[in-house]
Every structure is written in structure tokens, then in C-alpha cells.
Image (cartoon, rainbow, N blue to C red; front, top):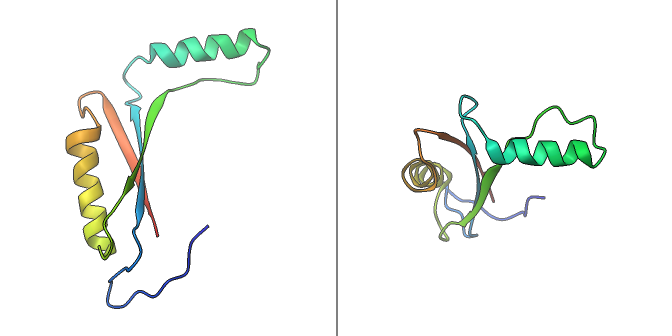
Length: 96
């Protein structure tokens, strides 16, 4: 659901939120995911092929930040703080 608001010349008077999803790279073994997968199978969920676990962050950005600056800031935070780039990857989306 997106709220309607006035945006003038890229200025956003509403605080935007960034949703950042961090997960292990596909080439990295995920023992927690394997344990969850095994438990689901034992509980009768037979249609599950694989489970990969990860982390979710909701970041509220300051009022008035434009979308370009918001994307740059979230990308930098995710790359430098929220992930270990050796073993993890991230995706994010900005919500008005």
C-alpha cells in the first residue's frame, strides 16, 4: 500500500522506509536453512524443495530525502554495515 503525498522537485515531505533483505550467497552453505528444511519435512511439508534463511531490516529515512539520495544511502548502509560482502548479498526496496 502506498500513501499519496505531494512530491515537488524530488522533495518528499514524508519519511520513506527502506526494506533491506540480507541472505547468504548461493555458494555459501546454510546450515540453519537446512535444519529448518529438515524440520518442515518431518512436520509433513513435503512440497518444500529448499530453505535459505536471512535477515530483514526496516530503515526509516529522514523527512525530505529525495529518492536518488535515499537509494544511495540505503545501498551504502547495506553494503558497508548490514552485510558481510564475503558471504552475504542484499536486496532492498524503498517505500514512500
